[in-house]
Structure formats: C-alpha cells, structure tokens
Image (cartoon, rainbow, N blue to C red; front, side):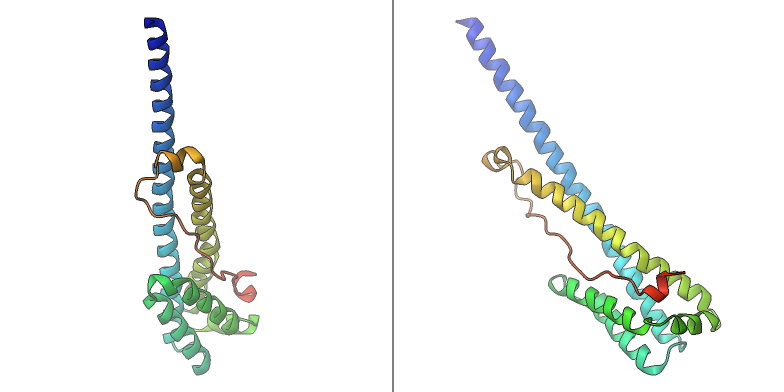
Length: 178
C-alpha cells in the first residue's frame, strides 16, 4: 500500500514539475515577445524620426517632403490599433519618394545628405529584422499556448494571446541597393 502511494506521489511531483517547467517556458516566451516588441517599436520610431528629419531638411522637393512628412508623422502618432496601417503607409511613402536612384543621389549630394541617407538606409533595413524577431517569438508562444496541457491547466494565466505585427516593410530598392 505504501509503495503504491509513493509511486502516485512521485508521479504527481513529476507532473507538477513538468507543468511548472512548461509554465516557465511560456513565461520566458512572453518576456521574449515583450522585448522583441520594444525593439520593434524603437526601430519603427527611429525609421519614422529619420524620415521626418529628412522631409523637413529641405533636401527633397516640396511634394516629396509633404508626402514623407505626413506619413512619418502619422506613423509616430498612430494609436496601437492603427499602427500597422500607418507603418505600412510610411513604407509606401518611402518607396514612392525613393523610387529612383536619382532621388537618393540628390539627397547624398546635399550638405549632410550622406549621413541622412545612411541613417535612413540603416533604419529601413532594421525594420524587417525586428518584425521577424517579434513575429517568430509570437509564433512560438502561440504554438505552445495551443497545447492542451497549457489550456487545461491555464498555464498562460491572464496573459493576452500574442498577436503578430503585420505590415508592409519592403524597403525602397534605390535606397538599399547600395
């Protein structure tokens, strides 16, 4: 009788340890999502700030400056629900303004333009990587949260279901070819 109770107790402890390990893993994934989201937000803010600086520098023609400034301003001021759309519109504005290599060369020839073009190129290149890191973390957390053991034992607690950040992050080819 006591041997049976000991085996039941060992099995319950093993199950408890496994569930605790799974909950810890899920918690680490949620922390990874939070860190990746903060990095994505910083990257998007940097891209919008550099685009806004470039739009107000007087290097671009007035129409391109207005288009770029409005898109960058909208991206910086967007509410969370509208952020993906605003960031996609900024990507489209960047592609429209820098559709031709000639426009990029004009920016580079202007005083301080070489640094501005380099900053914008770096900011534009970092956005897809930051978004990919965030969405990979979301995908991993979602996969774990869909397991029965996580749902049945409520191992996710009250954490919201993670959402991917979907946006148009294609960079202007004239800007990134160099």
